[in-house]
Length: 106
Length: 174
Image (cartoon, rainbow over all chains, first blue to last red; front, top):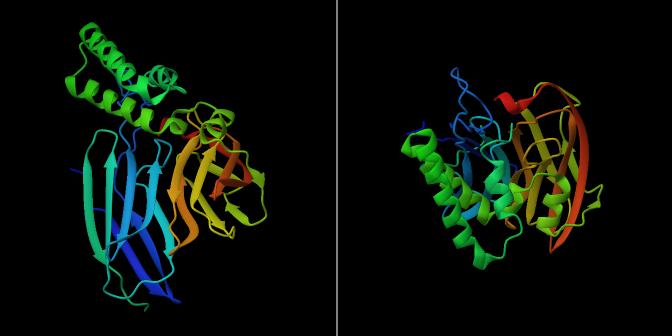
């Protein structure tokens, strides 16, 4: 099982900045191992981010997104302590869901 | 470089929905034949089959050229100053290229990132509801020095911005 998704959501200037880092190898299938065999492609294909139960971003990724995909975006509303839920599915059908909350601007 | 993935891509190109199931079945059988021939671990075939299914659902992600991506999206993008695309002019490591897109197009619903020189140029698609700003930043792999395109879809209209980037070491090895 891959490492937990790291989520940072900070309320700021009437909106909320959301940073998401999803540890994942994002193998393209084009790389070879030491034995010269192609390493099987393995990458996140779908990401969904919900704030307080509402979908705020859906992403469809390809193998060309860098290892440990990073997403940074901004929503218009968002209050401190509202839950942020991030889920992904990869090309092997593996899944991961993690949750955090919006923090107040420091 | 494309071996292993170019076959399913070609198979699924512009196939009508009704034929996909039988196509997938054929591919599965082909996969099993390959397994027998090369004695691959079982999980590997499972993975490849899953991948073929993903490609079938999202044809544009399996497209092999910019023109094909645009054709499958049915997009005729018009260059727009309302899209700002930030990509470094020079990147040392093609496996880690920061891309930032901000759109001031009213009613932007989808944002696409396309890297022209990649074996599969469509890199990512973001669906942005009204309550989310039309802004997204991420990091992508770029195979070679090429143009990066940002495509913004709003009510079936496509607007675009283009930026060239020079890559010292290509992103295919990562």
